[in-house]
Length: 207
Image 1 (cartoon, rainbow, N blue to C red):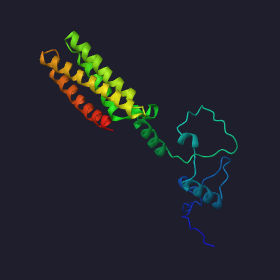
Image 2: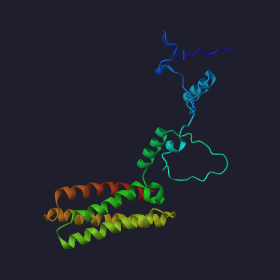
Image 3: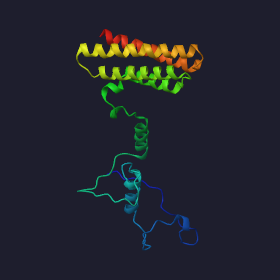
Image 4: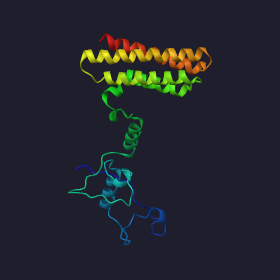
C-alpha cells in the first residue's frame, strides 16, 4: 500500500513545547484537533475538479428562486464559462427560425430592402414618389406570391409580374433623380438593389 507523504502539520516552538498560532492544526467547531485522515479527506475533497461547491451559483440562478426537484438532485455539468459561451451563441442567433422558408431567401430580402429604400428615399415629386412606392411594393408582393408556389406556370406568372413592377420602379426612380427630386446617394442605392433583384428574378423565371 502506497502512503502519501504530507509536509509536517505543525512544529513545536523551541523551549516552550507549544505550537505557534499560525502552525496549529485545524480544529472543528468544538475546538477538537482533527486527525490526519480527516485532513487528507478534506484536501482530496477540495482538489476534486468534479466537486460542485455551489451548483446554483454555477447555473447563475437567483438564490431566492426555489427549484422543484423530482427524485435525486442532479448536479449540472455546465461550468460558468460554458454557460457564458452559450449565452453569447444565443445572442448571435438570428430570427430565421421564426420565419417562413420563402422569407429566408436572398431574393426575398433584396426585394424587401428595395421597397424600404424607395420609401426612405423620400422622392420630392409627388407623382413619382407614389408611382415608385406602389411599383416597388408590387414587385415585392408578387415575388412573395410566386416563391411558395410549386406549379411552374404560376411561378412564372408571378415572377413576370414582379419583374414588370421592378422595371417600373427603376424608371420612376431614374426620372426622379434626373429632375433633381431624388438625391444621388439614394438613387445609387436603389439602382444597385434593383440590379441585384433583376439578376435573381431572371434565374427564377428561367427555372
